[in-house]
Image 1 (cartoon, rainbow, N blue to C red):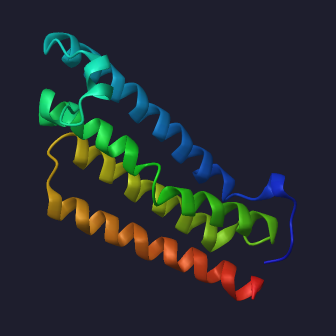
Image 2 (image 1 turned 90 degrees about the horizontal axis):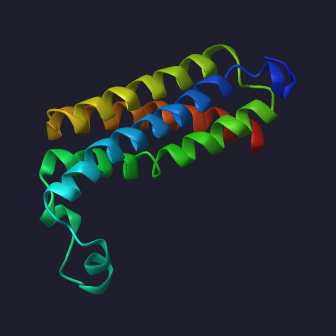
Length: 147
């Protein structure tokens, strides 16, 4: 794989797709959380004043699963975004790395769907572990060239 322009780096497509998915989860979170807060008569100001108050205690678990997943999409995927940009910049954002990036995004989307619906921990763990292995391969591919 030779150096190409950033505009030709296929790996940026799955990176943007995961950004879009993150915003889908943001919308889903608020579409369920705001009505649940109203129904539970949650006082948002109390949440910031009372150290014992939390939405996890005040709202149904299945409502909070969306918020937890939205938070998860701001954790490990930040490393994915960084490695995708690095691979694009060094000309390795096409071919197998682009495929792996799509695989990572697919696994994260499936992880989200499991977490916000059935929330089966072992299924989530397997999906997270598989996506982590894919991410490790992408990081390794970048490290080989950078170092």
